[in-house]
Length: 52
Image (tube, rainbow, N blue to C red):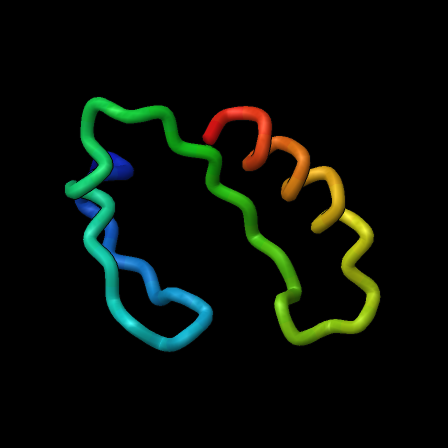
């Protein structure tokens, strides 16, 4: 199985096929999105801003 075979759910519950990102760089992060203690978001936001 390849990562592109996976279907994941967004934070809004929508299903997304990772196949649509083939040929692009992926950063896959498992976070506790509904947890109040998410200091990693600051670093992820800086990473996002630096590549967009």
